[in-house]
Amino acid sequence: MLARPIAQDRSSDLDAALVRLGLPTPAREYLLEKLPHAQLLLTGLGPPEGRFLKHLCEEGPPGLYPRFLSGHQAVRPGTALLSGARDQLLRLVQAAREATDLHPLADALERALAVDRLPEATQLGGRRFLWGSRTYLMGVLNVTPDSFSDGGSFASVDRAVAHGLALAAAGADVVDVGGESTRPGAADVSAEEELRRVLPVIQGLRAQSGVPLSIDTRKAAVAEAALAAGACLVNDVTGFTADTALPAVTARAGAAACLMHMQGTPRTMQQAPHYQDVVAEVLEALASSVARAEAAGIPRGRIWVDPGIGFGKTGEHNLFLLHHLQELRLLGCPIVLGTSRKAFLGTLAGGKPPEQRLPGTLACVAAAAVTAGADVVRVHDVAEVRDALAVADAIRQARAGGTLWDASR
Image 1: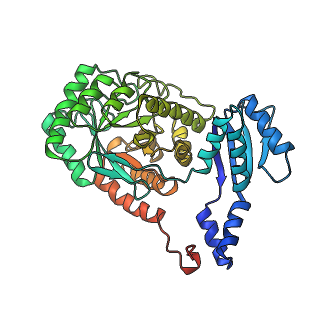
Image 2: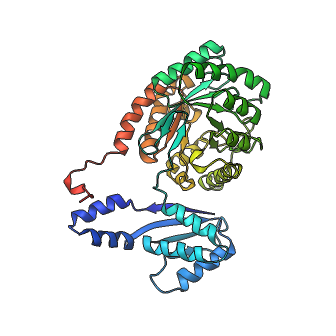
């Protein structure tokens, strides 16, 4: 069950506007509760939730609860809309919390009202990732012969280690080591071959650098060996769906997890991907992945989520997800975005090959950082993206609008 903010006031900007009216603090606080606050799209409602909302919002005392809109002919069953002020929505949360078997509805509404709340900081190795302070960089280190962008470039251990060190020196906050290509149409690789590729590289990097290391794998056996060798993050493109042992392996090691959404498998994912509602379906799948991680003993503060741009999505799906990236905040986890050099960027630029997609990559990560607050971007070109993010983060965090916009008075 999801409550997705379709429109929601930015209370900091609204408070600043009320300051300009000369209103004292108590009046501003009162208005922030009473003025229209949000329109929430509800999906996944069952009959009990629908009856509950209809009874309270349509038949209860006028003005006590938000407006409730539903349709008997909804394209997707279990869909409705709530519209109201913050105090009305909070009152509804409390009523749902007090009712029997309606805690999932209360949880969904609370997540929507807290969508601007920053996730808990993550400790990786000796580094603390303080979300909201800036956009962090995950450097891509593919030790594969067939990755779409740089397959075969770092096939030897020495070259791979040297490139990983260069990524760290250029500003990578995490280096993501992968030994199996997950490009569209890619064939599976055995755990033995994957370990042969990644273990010496992880060991070499750990011996020469303190940069946090991630293992990009969907196999428990590979993750277990990589974590023992010094990795501290498991990056699973299947969101803990391919190998049921992987969540427990990650939890036992005290590692963090990056859980990505993928429709299908790398071999089949780009064969006519289809969605009724790409945002809702990605959110629902990632929520299930997060639940699997927590059930295995991985705390929410060590779980990251990735919408899986290019993994079982058309170019239009990718763009729509990027436009609605902020909705992933409903999961309460840091958002990882991997668009570096991907095919849809080349298509938008007139058919550019991977090695000519840096401008598109820079535009994409900068836009995502500014408009949606992506927490981590996974990229090949660390130094160039670092500079772009320095500008994007400064724009996103700009607060000096003049004395009339100072809401702290």
